[in-house]
Length: 124
Image 1 (tube, rainbow, N blue to C red):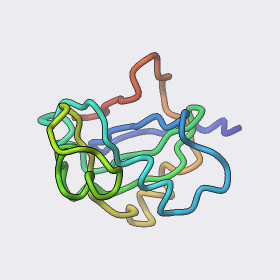
Image 2 (cartoon, one colour):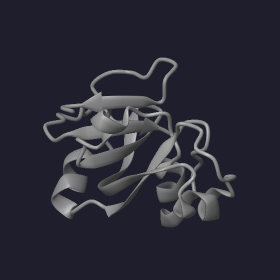
Image 3 (tube, helix red, strand yellow):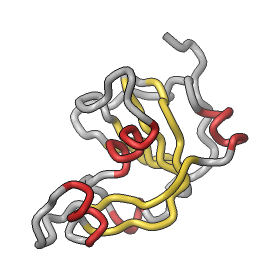
């Protein structure tokens, strides 16, 4: 268990994936579990530059966010088998963050805990 606390200075959305995370997930599976779809405040989420995948309070990976899409977009219908029709959820499209950002966050604990809601915003 990591004792270091992440000092989050960038606009970040933290996404708790406790329910779907398990050891041995592939890089692609971890990305897909993290990116969505979620009930987010889209205007607030669009301010975030990075999304962090969090399990057990520890940051597992960091993704650079390119854009947010509604759950009924072709991307998520194909990926998640979601039916057409917006359910108010959104997910992001992105890629693994640059190494300097990953080094800053991966393996460190969030400064606070999640309670009930799987989304937490920092600096956005």
